Amino acid sequence: MGMKSPVLVLFFLPSRFLHGMIEKSLNRRRKGRPSCSFVCGKQNSKGIICAMKFETIRDLQIPKIGFGTWSIGGRESPDPASDESSLAVLRSALELGYTHFDTAEFYAAGHTEELLGQAVRESGMSRENLFITSKVSPEHLNYEEVLTCCENSLRRLRMEYLDLYLIHWPMRGMNLVDSFRALNQLVRDSKVRYLGVSNFDLGLLKTAAELSETPLLTDQVPYSLAERTYQQNGVLEYCQQNDILLTAYSPIKRRKISGSPILKVMARIKHASVQQVALAWLVQQPRVITIPKSSHPGHQEDNLDAAGIELSSADMTLLENE
Ligand SMILES: NC(=O)c1ccc[n+]([C@@H]2O[C@H](COP(=O)([O-])OP(=O)(O)OC[C@H]3O[C@@H](n4cnc5c(N)ncnc54)[C@H](OP(=O)(O)O)[C@@H]3O)[C@@H](O)[C@H]2O)c1
Image (cartoon, rainbow, N blue to C red; front, side):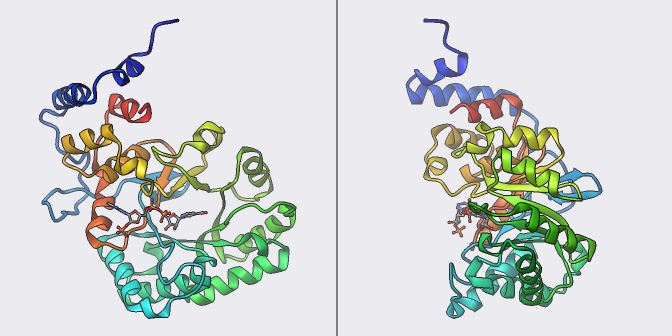
């Protein structure tokens, strides 16, 4: 048997001893360092000044942390009874400073888009200061339907254009050449600024990148400390090497995150929640952005502030190897 790596050795130690070691090491590194690594003007309810971190990609600056809208306004079908509370959720996200909103025609069968459009109009925010992503469902991927579905999303949102339009997930037998003929047309017609895909593995991502007339902006995939499929299958590395964003969805949902001992210790030391540290681990990675969803204003604020939590490379490795 060869030598175990230092990280592996850590895992053979009793957990109380391990927590003590991590805490001491992190405390040494933290001395004199504020919780936010940069100052951009916004003061949160805890008096910490921190603001959004951006990923710069070609001509675009996109927030590292956006807002997911799945289940707002209904799930597979609309739930009009929840409209008031759904609008309140979107209103608070806008007020807190989220500018990237991720939605889809699939969400509440289009009702989520209607509510998002309404909340944006009521907020008085100017359209140019927002970044709106929507998605076409896989059963609508032929040329005509892609064009029609995009028009329908724009009508529901009551917007002139989408910032980003994604194929929601791949379908067996889909004709990507036909789909991208329509998607490229939408960009030429200024209905869509950027194109992307979602849930595409490496082979499909490469095909999509070739078919897109403009550089593909993102592959939106499940990615978190608890879900590394798209790190293991090469998508993350390909994105980082080819200037494509990996948009991490479901970044904090898993029980493995709320129950992780190392996350708990790290969170205590950073004066943050485990969910915030899990988000910080994501957004510190190049070419990675994320879109947590929360119906809870306190959580929405925490998630935005997570971009200000600084993790050293040793912290990143500890978390990654748990
Ligand atoms: N492309 C795709 O196929 C795909 C698939 C799934 C999701 N998505 C997108 O990604 C977005 C996010 O993913 P998701 O909604 O699946 O999961 P998520 O954002 O990882 O987790 C949402 C859950 O976490 C809780 N939460 C959020 N912030 C928290 C915090 N600071 N502390 C404690 N709990 C917190 C929320 O509860 P509270 O509401 O109570 O805060 C909610 O139950 C979706 O809304 C959607 O836009 C895309």
